[in-house]
Each structure stands twice: as C-alpha cells, then as structure tokens.
Length: 388
Image 1: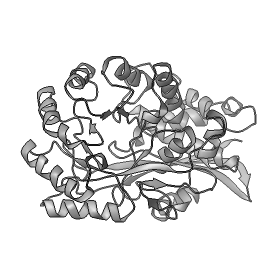
Image 2 (image 1 turned 30 degrees about the horizontal axis):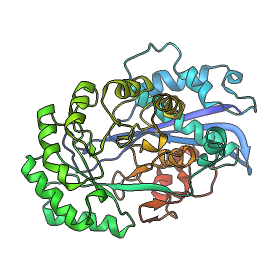
Image 3 (image 1 turned 60 degrees about the vertical axis):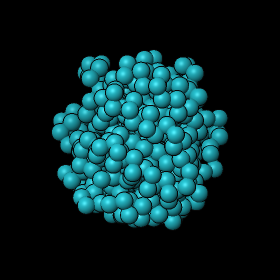
Image 4 (image 1 turned 45 degrees about the vertical axis):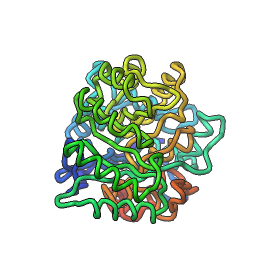
C-alpha cells in the first residue's frame, strides 16, 4: 500500500455564534485526502481527514512540513507487517526533526493527516474504524451505541431566553436527553437566569452541562461554582485557563460536583500534567481531549495508556469535537461518550445521516472507514478531493 497523492483544501465553517472567548465568524478547517494505490471493489482507497472546530485551518504547516515528509519518506518505512500503511510509522515520519514541547498548531496539522490515514487503513481492511480499533486495542469489544450530548447554547446577537429555550427543545426533539450550554460571556447573574431557563426545559440538572471556555480567573470560577453547585449539573466545563493546573486544583477543593476540561490540551505530556497537577478526581471528573486536535489517534492511544497508569478509566473520557472520528474512537475503545453539534459547525459536526440519536445514544454505521461518505453535506466537500 503506497501513498500516491495527498490533496488539501481550506473550507469555511463560519457561524455567527460565540462562546465566552471567541466568535466563529471567520473559522476555517483543513480537509485532506490521502490517495493510495490500494484498490478495493475496483476503486482506489482514499482516506479523509479534517480538524475540529475551534482551531483554524493548517494550510501552511500541512503544505510546508507534514505532507512533504510523508511524500518523501521511503514508502516501505510507512508500512505495517501486513503491507498496509501504519499510522504510527507515518506519525513518526511526520514528526521527524520536530523538537519536543510547544504543542501548538502543529498538533492540529498532524491530527488532520492522522485521521485520513486511519480512514484509509480501515477501508483497506474493509472494516469500520470502530471495529478495527476494538479488534486491535480493546479485545474485540465495542460498544453497541455511544452516549452523546448536544453542545449548544451559544451567544447569538439578540438571542433571548425564549430563543435559548427553543434551541434546547430542538435538541430534545432530535433525540438528545443531555445538552450543554455556554456561560461566562455575560455577567454571572444573567448566566444564572439562562441556566434556570434551560433547566425548565430539560427538567433535571444531570441533563445539563455548562461550559465557560476558559474565561474565568480563579475567584470568578469559585463564585460561579458556588452559585451553580445546587443545580446538580452534569458537569462544569473548562472554567479556567486550560494550562493553569494549580488553579484547577484549587477550584476542585471548592467545587465538589463534576468538573470537565482538556479540549485545549494537545499532547500526552500536557494531559499528564493535568492529571498530575490539576486536582481532578477520577471518580467523577471528565476529560475532553480531542484526538483530531492533539496529534491524532496515535497520540491519543498514548494518552489513554498514561491515564490507565494513573488510575483513570477510559470511561471518564468524552472527547471534544462532535465528529465521526471521535465517535468511532469512543465506540471502539470504550470511552464514556462523545460530544455532538447538531445543526452547528456544518458540515463537519454531526454523524452519519442514517444514524439517528435516541435518548442521547447513537449507533455507528457498519461501513468501512470512518463513514464520512454516509454524511451527505460533508461528503459534498470531500468528494472533489477524491476526484482530484
């Protein structure tokens, strides 16, 4: 199996929404196609990848460093014992001459290509990615369905409480029983009114999580925690700067209910620092590392090994991103679930068109690869790359 071409484009995911830190009006994503000489059912095997929302397209890094390294590598050095592409060996080739540390935007570029490589390998094996992962890394055990929640509740211009409630009603109508909303972008008193408005729709605190997107300083995070502790929320997400581990540890001494963080940590080493120094509790807290943003699945497997060595179950992992790649990983590796962005961040958010959500659970299609071809609006973006 050889790589014969790698194609890359930049695609917009613009939206008028905002969280407590950024708006998404200029957001972009990189999309790649890794074309191989492997033929299945008369067609060349092509793997596709893209980066999750929240980080911009990585055109420069992809075209100047990581794509050329794959193309210039000895083709034999990229193969596994079966003669197929080895994502781990491809990862090593991409990271050649990269210094350790500084896990910034390069982790996103590598993650885009890693996703495409796993898609190609699973297609070459004629297996869904979740099945491939379960067989290789989870004793053949895959979850029948994944738990998912609807992430929304963003700040729109002119959006009032009634509109926020209508949004949450739509998610319930789509089959979600758990939702998430943004806070931290307005004064706390206003956010408390927003939370209470949503609770009137979802009914129970355990059916609602809140997300600050790292906006608060420690005193603000403690004050908010004290104000929301009585609601019994599913979790209190990223209340502090993601790299301020000491502040997270301090907050955990004040806020007993579940905390969630990790979506803005992009390496096993950063995840390990969070576990060592962030005061998080493996019996209740949620880890949200996003494989697509953090050097891909090759690195995510290292992160899971690190977590197990430190007493954390994979079930405490609920990846950020709301995409099919993380969903396959959640099912195949026995994670705790996956984020979902219904009707947001199109066309990259969401799952296969023929896999509806029922009581916040979703099945994966039994098709080779990640399943992008079963999501019509996303496939419309990727198909031209397949055709060259």
